[in-house]
Image (cartoon, rainbow, N blue to C red; front, side, top):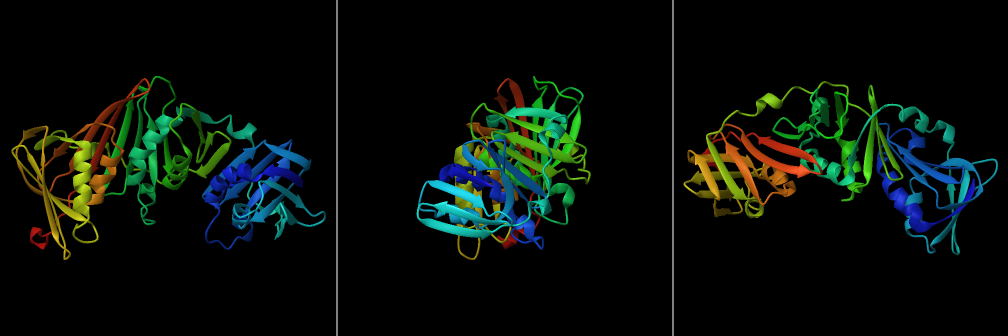
Length: 382
């Protein structure tokens, strides 16, 4: 293997690919990146056995085809290489690889690519079921559901986002960590697709979200049985679907409300942010109180206390004596809403709090609901 390439091009791809190099593993081979030069293209692949990322680069000068697995240190080496022009060549007979950049030469002891997990050929996964979104649309979707995914290893069913399409072509994304629930529903999506149900790992979607921009460029999702592949630009993200069944949580949303308010989104976001600075305990507990047309936000801890009053745009139903909530659990949805005003339903001091939003995404109507459960403690403790 021998090729020449611009360092900036290599880094553009490796900065993404390196995200699925495992931090800890007993399998030496997957601690590196597979480089393969074939058909005038450079392919780079990483794999942590949960997710694999592949990048294909055509802007290279091929001198000799070949492949090798290089240690993850190649990323740091290239970052500090003194010259934009980089030459990489593997010694014949073994996997020792030389990296030449200006007057700097590095030698890495490569590994046998035959021991690296294989990535499915394009001809295989392109025959799977598929659905596509614009980058802008998918980025907006992920922003609204990713944060509610559980990170608890003991709750495998909640470590992903449930992606569903029903018989009426309604598309929904649901995530929950059992303390809160995010539900985005795209009503009668214009582009038709067969009914499906996929439980996609949150880690995979998190990495995809990091590279999406606000363009109309398409991201394709291919799936079959327990596998899924996302294709975006020169990158492929492959992973296994979560096999645990996601419970039906759509019925947990109350059909009515006791108190409904309409409040300026950014004003409330900033107020809750200030309250979180002095929020009580590990769960960042704050207090909300509604009387007439005023929302009172309170927080307190051993450090100090804060109080702030917000004027509501509208209020329906009863006053709310007090509800205790996790500040971060309220901030997360407020930060991703695009609406100038946010509608929030309360169901008493111990019932769920619901945030509602509706917007147009391209030609589709999107309805977003977010549920958070109150904290039930002795109110004298704040």
